[in-house]
Amino acid sequence: MTCWVTQAINTINADYQRSADTHLIKLAPIAFKNIDIYLKDESTHPTGSLKHRLARSLFLYALCNGKIVQGTTVVEASSGSTAVSEAYFAKMIGVPFVAVMPKSTAQSKIALIERYGGQCHFVDCPTQMHSEATKVAKELNGYFMDQFLYAERATDWRGSNNIAESIFEQMKAEPHPVPHTIVMSAGTGGTSATIGRYIRYKGLASKLVVVDPEFSVFFESFKTKDHTLTATKGSRIEGIGRPKVEASFQHDVIDEMIAVPDAASVATMHWLNNTMGIKAGPSTGTNLWGALRIAKQMSENGEAGSIVTLMCDSGERYSDTYYSAEWVQETIGSPDPYNVELRNIPLR
Image (cartoon, rainbow, N blue to C red; front, side, top):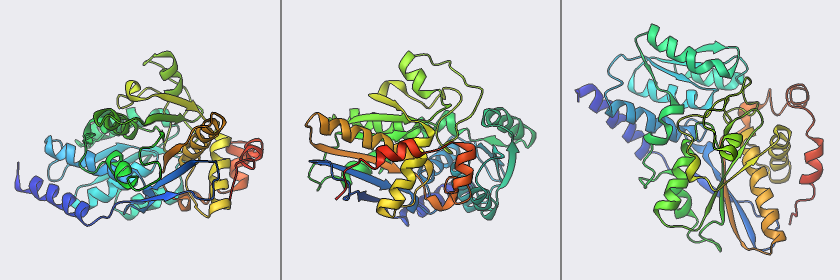
């Protein structure tokens, strides 16, 4: 390796050493008997989302594989959060960064990318991101990071303080230390692959349930075992769901999938904010809707245990979109039918 690559790797590792782990929050107001629900708050990373972990891993993977050298322009296809985190690491090691993203991406995310020195290249639809990113990288003689291809292999799923190891370490002193279920949504599929593999590697009894929004093919692909499915429209829940089955999405490590209506995701993120004062993004709404559904099933079956899910990012990024009643009505539709169901969740 060149001196520059060695220095870049050391710089990223030093940043990791300065970072604390993220909090695991017990959602104590939820009162299903003998069932505890936890939310791992990934919004406390330096770049504000779960994708900070992925971006770090992708940069180290690319550097160690000789794909990024001094002056390489890094290009990524992202609806926002991954691009924000990659812009942070690109600035850290001093390489240019270009994010290819839909025009509909939240303005707050665009501002963060530009604050870290990244450039934003827009497409009309999420289905255009991958091909456009490939084109941009070629034109700039750069490197297409391709989170959707490399996410599942860039992270060491056996440990090294990955998110799965962190969850199980933090649960050790809880009443039900080995979760009954871990609930995760899929964007690249990398995090669900890491969690599913870790559960099997450690011989744990936990189930992995992946939740999926509308206009995403992951749920249907899991159900039919068809890996070639595609959609003509992108997900409306920013950061998760894909119009094609990505290489990082690992069907075989998932125990169950739940399709979540987009309006239910929005209703749940608002319910979390209104009942517990936790302002999260829309993918957290998707995750928590799935966790609440599982808790209800466990309660009906007389089961006891814990459920862990993720807060992927903060709701502060979505003040002009998912926290705008007018925007939600025009873009997603009315969350009222799901608000009725959420009002029946038992609270202390």
